[in-house]
Length: 71
Image (cartoon, rainbow, N blue to C red):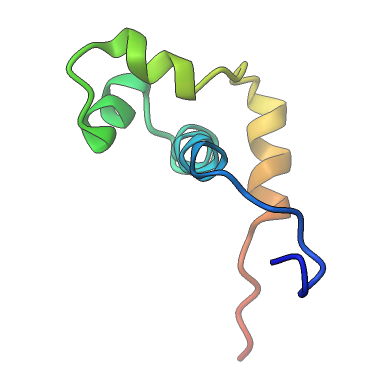
């Protein structure tokens, strides 16, 4: 990753990103993220989903990561 010019990424960062995307872009609630991650206790899931889900933020994230289809 360094040779390609990227900062090293920890697996925690990837999991946090995955959970955040489920919440903000996928419209999932915490219980669905809990099931996706296989956590027995929702408190564990909350560690990975420390974001404030403001609808305005969700809209910005959706726009930023929207896939542009090439027709």
